[in-house]
Amino acid sequence: MIQRIQTVYLLISAILVALLSKLKLADLIVDEKIYSFISTGIYNGEERIYNGMPILIFVAILTLIHLITIFQYKRRILQIRMLVFSIILLLGLFGMFFFFAYIGFEGAKATFKIPVAFPLVAIILDYLAIRAIGKDEALIRSLNRIR
Image (cartoon, rainbow, N blue to C red; front, side, top):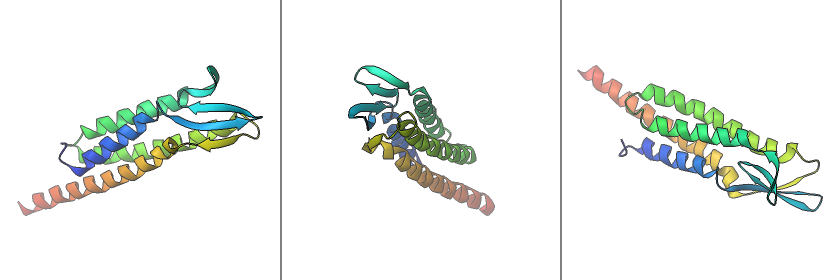
C-alpha cells in the first residue's frame, strides 16, 4: 500500500538505516593517529582494529524489520508493535555508536559524521508512522461501529 503516508515514512526509515552499513560514522583521533569508524569496524588505514559485526547485525535486523512492517499493512496492530520494537532497537544502535567510538581507546577524540543522526531521524519517522497507523485503525473501528 504505497499510497499511504506510513509506507513512505517506513520506506525512508529503512533507506536511512540501510545507508548506515556503507557510510563512515566517525573519525577517531588517538595519539595523533586517525582511525575510521565504519559499521564493519574501526580501521587504521586497511587494518581493522575492532570488529563492528554487532553494529552491522543491528543495521541488517532493523532494515529487515522496516521492510517487513511495510508489507504487514493488513495487520495494523502488529505493525505498531513491530515499530515500537524497532524504536527500541534504534535507541540501542545509537548507544552502540558511542560505545564503540569511546570503549577501545583511552582519551579518544571522536568527530561524528552526519550518518550517526540517521537512527534519530528513523525514530521520528517510525513515531510518525505509528501515529498514521493508529489513525487508520481508529477509522476502521469507527466504520465497523456504523454498520
